[in-house]
Amino acid sequence: MVDVIAFVRTISNQTETRRVKDQLIGAACGVDGNYHSACRARTPDEFASMIGTVLIEAAEAEEWLDVVYDSEIATGPELRRLRIESKELRAIFAKATLTANKNKRRRKKR
Image (tube, rainbow, N blue to C red):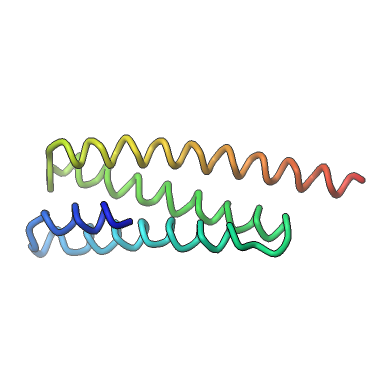
């Protein structure tokens, strides 16, 4: 989240960039906050639900970074690094969501 905030500060503050910047920061904050909440889940079912929310936020952050890239709002190595990291995080959270839901189904069969 901190890296995204620092990156967004490098983007010019124009009418067409404000919404994108706000959405990107919101999604990054959503990943961070929801992940920390998932780590404090009281039950496995609660964790499965919360980690699914993290996945949604991670996919949204990835999409907004793609919008920044595709619309050429920004360029450079930091954007490249953040896009790679966002794809990796989304993949990690996708796998974690699948595993948590698989474990949830197993518990219910017992």
